[in-house]
Length: 358
Image 1 (cartoon, rainbow, N blue to C red):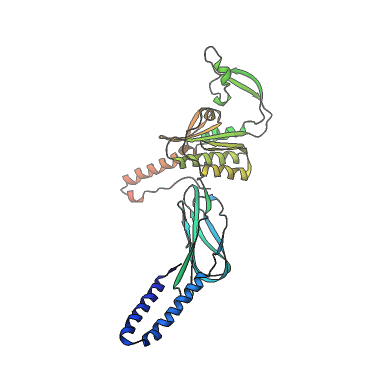
Image 2: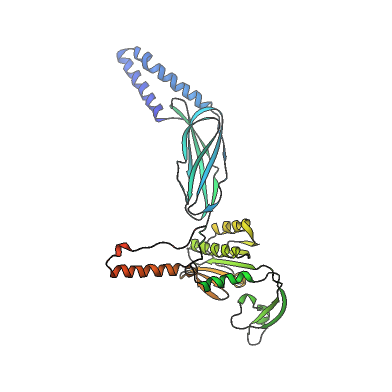
């Protein structure tokens, strides 16, 4: 419990009045000091008897970068008291309305405000503080609540509609592979066979180190795809975005998808709930390198390194920027810049970011 600025002003006035009373008589005490002292003591008693309010934080739904969410905090108080409520908004989020208010606590009250999701990751809202004061605002008692609310922000999911058709077909082709494959026989490796079908144990026993692949008998069920992603630089946001884009695209093709990153995995699954599980994993994925076996067994490998991000399908490396049509858009902008330079109108150069955020 402490005095507010107004409370310290009252104390100063009381001290000044006491000093004046030495010169002009005790009547100054009766006229000024007594009411102020009574108000100050009443404030101390009122605030001192205030019980700690009970706070309940409501969960905040996950979402994509750029979306807004409403934060709700319910405060339950036994009595009536003037209060100032302030909530903290962590990094990766920004408040679009004031994260707090001046109010009168009386029974149960819900405080709401809006935040914008700014960056991928798991962020925090809170801690909360409630400053309770007397009706005049002379004395204040602050209550701190360390509990925070987690907010998961998904990576950007890009639109692949602008990429070259051959690249899109290559990626979509892995969704057509069959799940209930039964071993049929081994045969010699032919150029173009996916490395995931290489039978490494048998190949290691070959005298000339020749590769041997497994042939399967399939029954035509829906495809299963394993997506693995690694980041060898600090640009893990780009890796997460590429992996989320690829996984979302394959789920939309009807495939059953598993995702593995250096610090976690999601098993095979499909549907909206599984899609959210994958996005949750990628929301908190960090840089790191995959094990050789994980990299080798993946149907689709997303790799981010110093040269950018590539999507590897059946040994074919596709730049992620090209897959999402970024190269075409950039090329168009370069052509526009050349034309405007020749025309002497460089200030009318156009630009923009291709792709969409889900």
